[in-house]
Figure: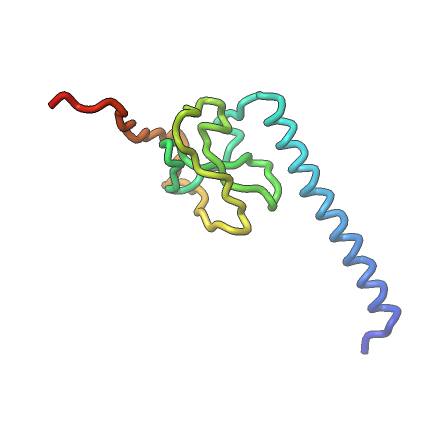
Length: 126
């Protein structure tokens, strides 16, 4: 039988562990925000890509390899600083809300850029 003292000790250890986990995720999020704020684009080797999900702009979805568990999928073009801002991009898709399959040895969107054709706003002369 578990004593009250053992229970209280386990609860204190659980709280301490949760505090460390929260701090870890906060530090990862802070590091990512600082990187974005610096304007330094991510490089291919710094990103983990989706298996087959693309942003509407044509780039694969990705996130930084050292992102914490509370991060999100984003347009690789935006993360690498090469995205065309005049086209639609996938909004940030939190890991907790979206199931996007990550890349593996055979399937990846790494290096993929399949732009959709822009629709001309000028009327056709035909």
